[in-house]
Length: 392
Image (cartoon, rainbow, N blue to C red; front, side):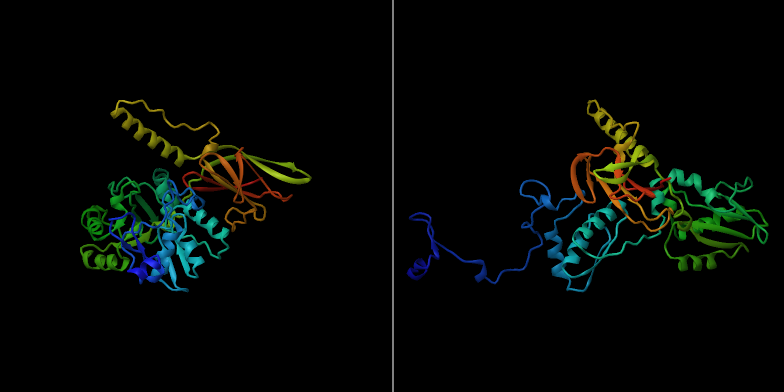
């Protein structure tokens, strides 16, 4: 005991109290990490990692992902995050020498992750999965457009309302067409019960000379499984059933926001540049979301006996814009995008040019950095939808 006291290893806070033995962490073997981790700082509140924040609602601390990735992988392995959010997983994986896959349905996630990876110098490719998901942002407009998108589809009075219409062909004559209702989630998946309903309930009422029908689907349990089911169950008619993936049609559906702008040459010091001014910006999706939010909030306020002041948008609608980019190299709408300059507007209205904060409120403009004339403008609304405008 005297030896430990001499070494400063015994601590007694007051006479008569129980003495304690002082130990150091580097002398201890440690213990496995528990399943509750309270030693990693969060992104909100006092002592938080303010410098990591990118204003993304579901953002996680980098230290958390670093611990998970180090504990579950080695360098060179692939780390996949299919609900990637702000891209923390991808960024940390890249820094730790891992390959990564970042996936997310939101364009805001893709842009935020892209900016994060560019900032830290990581190399990556951006790929777009054509899955027709974007149509769900505007299902009403999409349903209105479907008949014009499916070549030859027309109304057919002699068919039951189960069928959207028919296509006339020289070989098969009238071909009834089934379309899932985008506003009814129960019809999204083509499974055996739905296919059985088509065979047992809808097909028997078709005209006797019907030779073929077309069934469009968005999702399917298994095409091979459904085709085998059709082969086994469709024995009472000679009608051929053709399955078609509606996503191939829906990927062509683009409900763009309406952007009105004008372009003019301006002087930036001694340099001649170009300025694009957004005069008005209208987004049906943003307005729909705001209307839904107002209705919900008003109902909640009324139930509590309170008044609610609804959110409103100015006639110009510029507060609905989150990000802009100019392309000074390509004029074709569908050509690969070459960003010459970008402006990001945060939730308080302050702008950042090419990732550098200006400390100024956005004035509705975006300028080139040299004398090249802008050919295309890309605008992203606060819901994450992007619209490309050819500048004339």
